[in-house]
Length: 124
Ligand SMILES: [Zn+2]
Image (cartoon, rainbow, N blue to C red; front, top):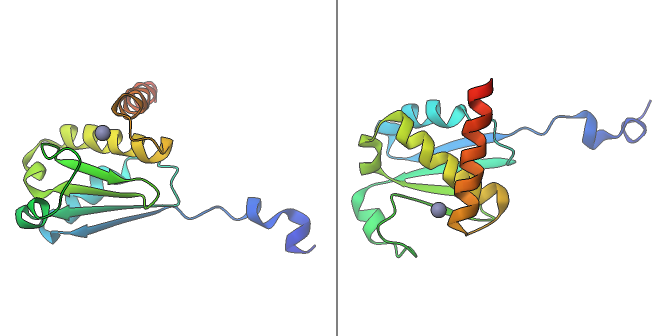
């Protein structure tokens, strides 16, 4: 049997990659929190920026502590935000993952996705 006969694209599971970049002091904790998501993106990169990097970069909403770039599947996190509890960080990541998964910049879409995610998680 040849690969084309068995439908190669379906038979080989797509490797979902999670990449953590930026401030190394927080990477293992971030890895642990983000690993909890069975995300549907082919790859998801989370970059922890220090204060200078964060401030030097113009964001649509400067008060945010997390921000994602649709299409690139990248989420940026202000390192100060890593002082928050794991629960709070997980909440924010779920919100950002909502933006990326739905390919939507709308806050209500991201919140709806996050709410659905946590509802599902509770049932497990
Ligand atoms: Zn948002």
